[in-house]
Length: 355
Ligand SMILES: Cc1ncc(COP(=O)(O)O)c(C=O)c1O
Image (tube, rainbow, N blue to C red; front, side):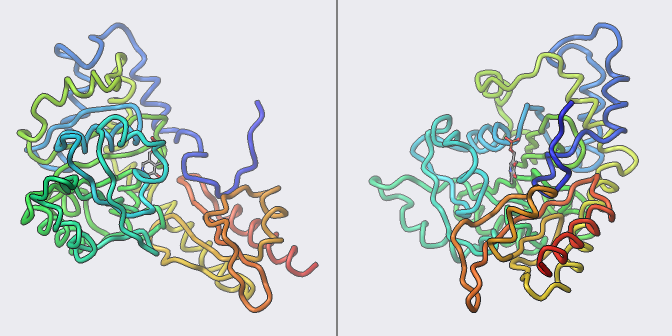
């Protein structure tokens, strides 16, 4: 099997963590109801696990991936003449190939952000469209937790946005592709930064933190999930062998597996940032809150490093620092990133810079 070098490209370049693989193998026994229907216990057990972490008044639906979770979750609150307000950097806006526009029919109202986060005063100007028949009607605010820039909303910031949304007859969606990393970063629990903070619907991800695949759409009020099962099926996201998504989430939410994996990834990012901060030619460009480190580095250094430790250039637009051409790169740590990876990478940077 050919693999790419183990670098810092993304937290979904890593494999499946052993505990999840074991859970999949254990689920791979006998015949069960398909689609999680009937008295299929594996899916029901997974839903009970979500209830342990998020409280009882939730409705949980498993889907294949994060794009679908975002699109279907948001769609629940929208007509095609509504709009979703989000950060310009949001996955929803940048990396879903127009899926929200196609499947919801929505307009995306973008807020420019340097750090991935938005606040209510940036949403406020869009309110002037409400009630004006020529404009699409803002209906959902969507935030990513962790953001695409590696930053994390505090619980207070989430609450403020949720209150603002509700005061204005809107809903708050959270793209939680990396929610476990955010919970660890804030030293809190899932419920405090979602249900208790006023989030209406969450895309709960695990693929970035050790799962093979699968995502959950979680509504924090059962009534909000009215007829969602039909939207999921029509949206081509009803998995037939449901036990293979459900069993992963059950294991993920048991014995702190989610927390251990995220703690490891986040602490590796801190170590990486610490090492990088000691190299004067490099500049950390975003707060390192969770498992991503954004760095400005000399452009000519990048290809040499990528040969041994692949990572993505985040911003292709060069920034000139003195007379040095710099680019911003993104370094993601994963549940399986090790200290050796970090030492090897930072030693390579030093070696290349000293040539
Ligand atoms: C912030 C964010 N949201 C959602 C996703 C989920 O995307 P996918 O549809 O590939 O599962 C990703 C993956 O890159 C992401 O980074």
